[in-house]
Length: 550
Image 1 (tube, rainbow, N blue to C red):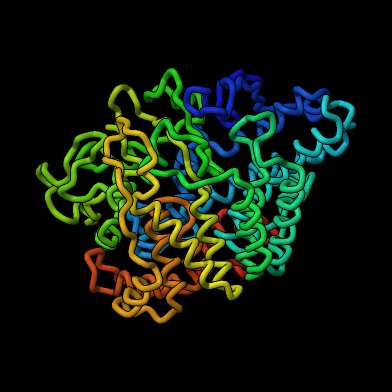
Image 2: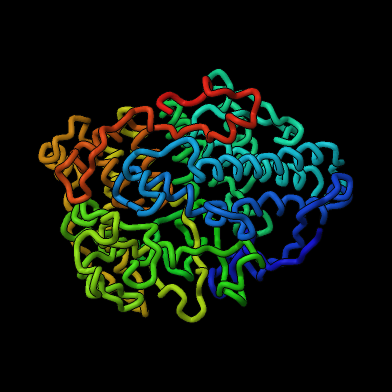
């Protein structure tokens, strides 16, 4: 079944929107079903098959449940809601109570979506291996790039699975859940990491810093080296990770967006801070009729707006987070519109309508604060049910903080503090002073301001809050908290660094906060449960293989 679509999975912006990035819209021939012989007959068909693997980064609007918001759930929810800095009502409130279970749809959908991508990559790589390099205009070099992109996507999905579930079945080239339905979990994580490392290394070696054919949305050397560095963080090989992050930093390809608030503009995509992102474009039909026509659409507006103004209550921001910023840190005004604030993009004030005037609203008492990163348009206004946004899955700021962590772990503390200072300098708006005046709805700094010394501030913060970890660990935890609220890495980083229990106990002491945390942290919850459906359908996995605590 063949269909022609205009999709932004590769080269997804026009020249007017991303100067010097891409030359035109990319019209992709996309195939739902391809006979294996047909897929590898010529170079054009092979590209179509590769595009089919990239297609798995988008939700399935013809699906059901959480599958239709892949990219929002589970990625952002898993990374944010268990920290309590971001919260949700309804059936997702269990994430905030740490009461999630193995039969939750979100985990099943995450598992299935990742293995769907892995299976596509494995089938593709199996066939590609039989293709003679002469098929490609660029010969072996082009074939290597295509293999690298497919292997990089496979590694990305395995890395997400391993961070979420720990040990997962490792389907290799040629294996799918159709021809290999019963695959056991490996005995330890090393087998998982070995394959991820091998794929990312191959991809990083074959890809360039700029995307192939200048088509933004393709994997790059920087994306693969960055994620490879994070794999080594999990292995606690900080020297190797530091070297990889250092290569990314020294490449000259990336830099911080001068204005933190502009990172999340609808028109901002593949800026100098983007290491990996997924774009959701503007289609001719962005109303309810878009459902079923394309999967490159996202409901962030309805998900993230206040219920006072037609939002669905999927993303509230805690008062503890909202009130946690140092004076002068502009990430507060760029990240949160809180009770009593007016959303500068929609001119709607929080807490003025009956039923929405309290700090906590709704039947489940959600905090009356919302993410300004995503609520930048009135849901449904101008026929925009879906919104043309980018999911900033990996930003350069994360690489700087990961590098800082490696510095502290390898005895280079002064260098580590310098990299934290770079993040804070942008947060206080000092990079904005070089920007021209424009129509951005929030005011930019016209003069540089003094930024408090991070080491001095966090030494006092540690004592005041009752942290016991090293000051630098506290600093990285809170800087990541402020930098990546409602994004894609915070909970995993807090778990990986051993800071999650301390963070929750110091920022959300049981029974003593507005959020009224009542649970005692269970260290087993640093991993999520193997989905119940997988245990029921995979004969090589039984309840005895379930992660501890579930």
